Length: 186
Image (cartoon, rainbow, N blue to C red; front, side, top):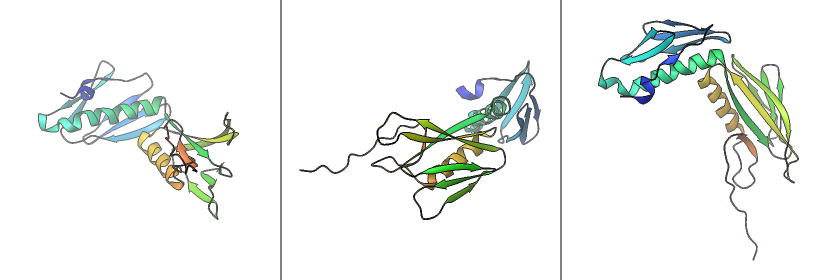
C-alpha cells in the first residue's frame, strides 16, 4: 500500500472539488486548478475529505502521485506557494517591470524574463553580514500552481547558474551551496 496514497485530504471550507473522469477541478479563494487523474486511480468525497483509491496493485505507482497532485491543488487554492531566489554578485541586479523581470547578470545585454500567467514576482534588498556583499537581492515568486512555480524558478536559476568558486549567480535561497577552494599559493 502507498503510505501517501492512503492519507485522506481534508477539504477546507470555501473549497469545492469537482471529480471528473480524467481530471479533478478544485476551486478556492485564490483561484481554480485542474489536476489530471491517472488511469487506475479513483477519487471519492467522504465527510469533508477527499480519498484516493486504486483499482489494483498494478496502479500502485500512480496512487501516491495522484493523491499528492490533488493535495497540491487544494493547498494551492487556499494558501498558495512561494519560492525565493537570491541574486548574488557585484553588479548583478533584478527589477520587476509589470509582467516581466529584467536582469543585469554580467552579460553585455540585459536579460528579460516574461512571467507566465498565475505567477507573481517581487524583489527586495536584504542586508547581509558578509564583507563582500553588503546587500543581497531576493526575488520572491508566488502562485497557486506548484509545478508552474517550480518551473519558473528553475528557468530563472538557469539564466546564470551559481559559480562554483564565489557563488555568484541566481541561487535558490533555501539551498546550501558548498564553494570550492581557490588556488593556494606556495
